[in-house]
Amino acid sequence: MAVNSSTHLAPSPLPSLPRSSFAFVSRIFLRPVSTSAFPWRTLVSLRAQPPSTDGYGSQQPLGLDHSGTSFGSTGSPSPSSSSVIDFLTLCHRLKTTKRKGWINHGINGPESIADHMYRMALMSLIAGDLPGVNRERCIKIALVHDIAEAIVGDITPSDGVPKEEKSRRESAALHEMCQLLGGGMRAEEIKELWAEYENNSSLEANLVKDFDKVELILQAFEYEIEHGKVLDEFFHSTAGKFQTDVGKSWAAEVLSRRNSRLTNSHN
Image (cartoon, rainbow, N blue to C red; front, side, top):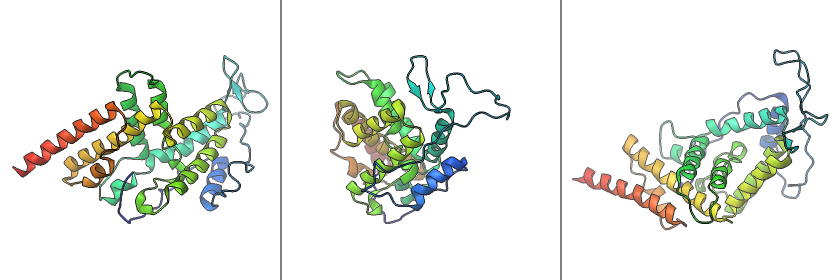
């Protein structure tokens, strides 16, 4: 999120996590990621424990092998239930961590990281079919493009973190999250989608990059109306940076509505 305020806010407290998740997250927050060690450093493997008599059944679930990895109807390995819940518990932070740019501009009760990604996914869903663009892949990219912020938080220009360092931190965090998920096909897909967006290396990434900016200026416009503020900075920081016809068209519509409102407010 493009901001220039010097305010630096710590990420919100972690929700209550299972012991395995707590140990995992503690390693991330209490120990800096070593560039030389990433991504080959050894991690403790998380395995599903046999179900106990806790009301959820006492027998081992069908399709779960001794390694804790389940297999779907196609025979493809899937994350264990334990790994899935650990991963989703960590992703809860995306719902509770507020976007820092809005906080820096005094917005009360601003959107969370998950709020931002959700509306981007909706943008990908409702966009018209475009030649050579896989709309389903756009939805997936939108859903994971900021997922590493569950660990590193919302790093903005006001934090003074160089772009390369920001990317390194997020890449390391993503690797850790995928390890927590248990690795495998789904984890590799998340890594691939994230890298595609980060590197802006496909038509789908181009489009979702534009949706990221459209969502930003649309939210800025909505906050201007709701809070009576003028948030020029977000419009200036995105001007001329849209890559696709859809992005340019949607951004132009937001700007047109904003300009009309500003004109009417001065009359």
